[in-house]
Length: 52
Image 1 (cartoon, rainbow, N blue to C red):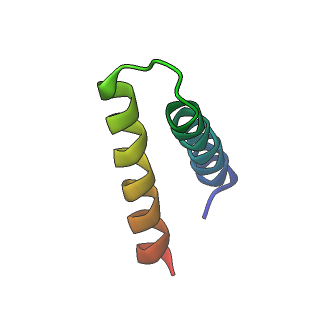
Image 2 (cartoon, rainbow, N blue to C red; image 1 turned 120 degrees about the vertical axis):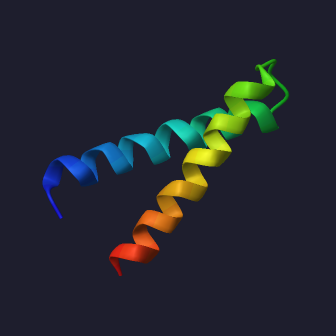
């Protein structure tokens, strides 16, 4: 897999985890932002499973 793909994948995971962390600590975030983070995590997991 190309290095660019891994970079986008890692950055996306970090951003998603950060959004989820903020949501879990009680800060106010739009529901759509949280939903997008969850969707990205699911898509990233499926992407890894397909690659393996």
